[in-house]
Image 1: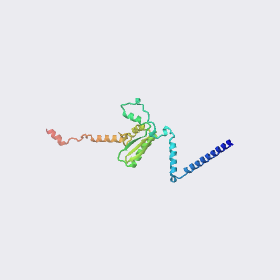
Image 2: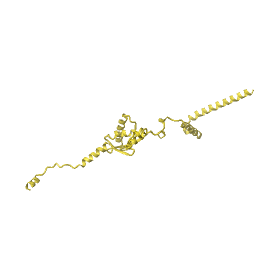
Image 3: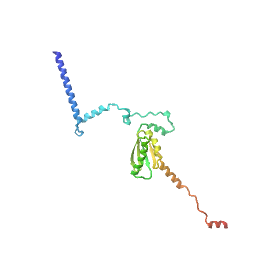
Image 4: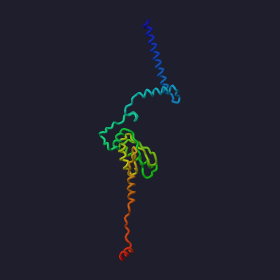
Length: 209
């Protein structure tokens, strides 16, 4: 008789647990279908608890936000310590980097958009993954996912006729437009050679002497 009573109690407990789980599941489904504007404080707390649970799941290295990833390992023995630019380039590997480019000739914002779009297309065709943002009438920002490639991109940009300047990490690199302007200024300052022939009066005076 004792055994039957025990079995009966266990059975009742199982049934109550199943009902409770089923009701909770239905409650969760009902809560998920709610409009966020109708959330109560209890709903918001439940949402926060779910976020906390999800935060415990570890993401793969490549899916982590950049500030959570381990910095790239730089083998200093393979780098030239007398070349700080190479050292800087190595430290930016795998890191997002922003560089600036200036368009020459006092362009409008629309002209800057068109010119720099051509540059971006050429870089995209060369397999460089970059984003471009026009920040003024003659200036753009290029955002590069792998910062180590910024110097390769700079080498391309400074050869473009309308590129006046490229800036990376506070250092300025003159573009083709700036070099051409400098050459023109130097040429304009050179004294002109006199090609005027001596007058007849000055020849006669020399003869009289």
